[in-house]
Length: 267
Image (cartoon, rainbow, N blue to C red; front, side):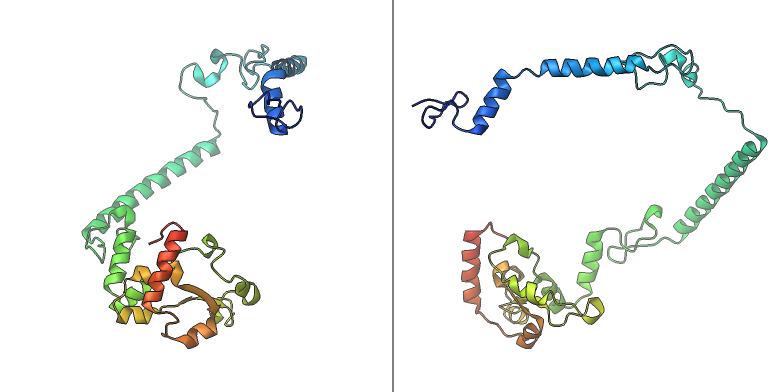
């Protein structure tokens, strides 16, 4: 048996390589010479440039191929680099007047900014959750951060409302394409309320062990929101199901264990 010249594996019949891939790797690494192609291309570009070169805007000397993207042949030819003070423009009277008016405008805006800042700190705005003072640059915000906002809403919701929010499904259906009946979505589409698309016969996600039953029995929201507790069904059937369960808590726990063995745990 012959061995592949690239990887050393045995080849079929008397072949030199075991596959086209090995053949291409060996040829590209050992037989082809790319250096000549690069040199010839560079020389062609340089020759083309020398036939129509660029000239320095300041002294008129030819700019070399190496510096072909520059506008000047050397640093000394750059006008604003001689004294580091920038290019001097001859402004018209209208231009000078425009600059004066702009400066006055910004000066007054600066005074207005200071006045607003003083006025704000005399009557500061505070976060309704933690009562911390909002800085002047965040004066249009209501809360000092997103955590305070979530905490504030949580404190002002009922226990049932918080439990219901914690039990919402937080996973993407596309992560588990073999677990759900996507043909229902293709047939009916997703449920949408009248003011959000008006598809009342569409599909929605059902909690097989219901949120209400979980609340009554003090079930951990992580179990209720687990993908193993999700089923796709037409929304009108989901609504008519109300708070009834299609599985028991024991069955749900068993489904979750099987799910977590099959997939990385999402708990």
